[in-house]
Length: 176
Image (cartoon, rainbow, N blue to C red; front, side, top):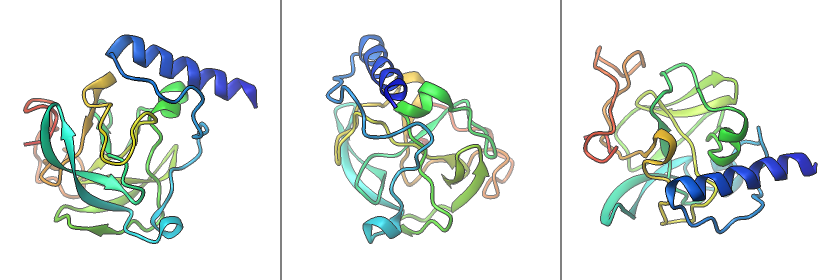
């Protein structure tokens, strides 16, 4: 499977050049279409909160069971992921058939889409970034991806939305 590695490495290099990202992973272990680890594999909640440095400030953000920061993609809708191909290789979707949460008050759901049972928080489909490590946020604002915080407003068209407008990246993309 050398072809996916070339695509992934090329995507990481392109992201590093475009956004000043320190690309510490030359060939990612994530494969295109391969879901991220679920809670059952790691023995914890699918989504929980953690503290991390985001744009120079300590913020409470959402992370997956492995402690990796979670992001939303601004062009997504509540029912459709716009992330595919090389973009999905760099931004793997968080998937779980029955997601669980700890420390959050919003609604966590699984949305059937091209990635399978993709996890959504307040209607925002969730992703990780291949250059992140637990507690380290490197993808904030890159290619329209923004860190998810517990207080992010529900996305219009989601089950949690009272007809609100989609969240915008104003306020640093934190959803408040």
